[in-house]
Image (cartoon, rainbow, N blue to C red; front, side, top):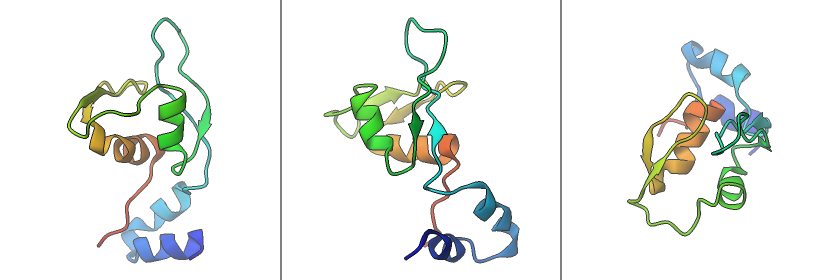
Amino acid sequence: MQETERTANAYPDAATASARIIHSCLSRVPCRWQIEGRSEPCGTLITCAGVSAHFGDAHDIRNVGGNTLIHCMWEGCNKWIKRRNFVRHIREPHLSHIRPRK
């Protein structure tokens, strides 16, 4: 299924039409993860699909139990997220990803 078809199916009503325009899972967004000891955030361009790999490689968030709490260091966030929800947390509020309705 192409990106536009998936998006159209995810947002069938007119009220969410603007969400189709704002977000693309293929968009590359700068990572705003604050790195200890640095004044500027990470800045690496990431996509929704690349969240797991980026946070594993660049920020060493890997091999962690699902219930382990992770402190979100995304600029302006400061929430504690269970590992099993971490990728979704990064994608939705920080990359503007909207999950399709079931």
